[in-house]
Image (cartoon, rainbow, N blue to C red):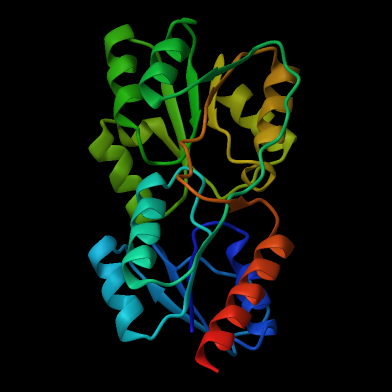
Length: 260
């Protein structure tokens, strides 16, 4: 069985690809988000977060032969745990990292942390839209209070996301909900409705709707602050599903050769 650590929109395609190789997939996701595999045969779900020890136990209990990590590009701790669990279990670890995009916009400012993003975003003295998800809210809420400026966070409409915003220091009226990726027009509507003057995003690639966010910001004439990705860790990372599945097939062939 293949352990597929999900969390991105590509997880469904990877699960389907694993099944097409004649393997069963155990898809581990933090939430019960739909995988959109188009089929359920051969794909088992497990919902809930696991630390390194939990992943190691799961690998042993379910006789996992390969770990395929398709967690979010910003889920650095999840990736570290998955890699360490695979190494400890002496099985192959393959990781998919959603490809980045080039963005030609003279008001795009890249920073390496949410703390730096909060400081820069609120330095413009304008209402700020957080299109970064529900994690790492605290530095933005703190800066909004310090400067007295308006902040709006757009997050998924689920209890976990809303609770994370509250725990991060945002009021309910500072949170709007929706499920992306959003079109340019939808982003522009949000910018106009809330009189947004700065947009903060992560470099989450095409599937994260980043190009549409930047195009909306360009149309509105407002700056974009982008938080760069964390390092995905040592070893090769695949940015295309076909390449990862080919590497998986080779790993499975190698394991079969050792047994025979």
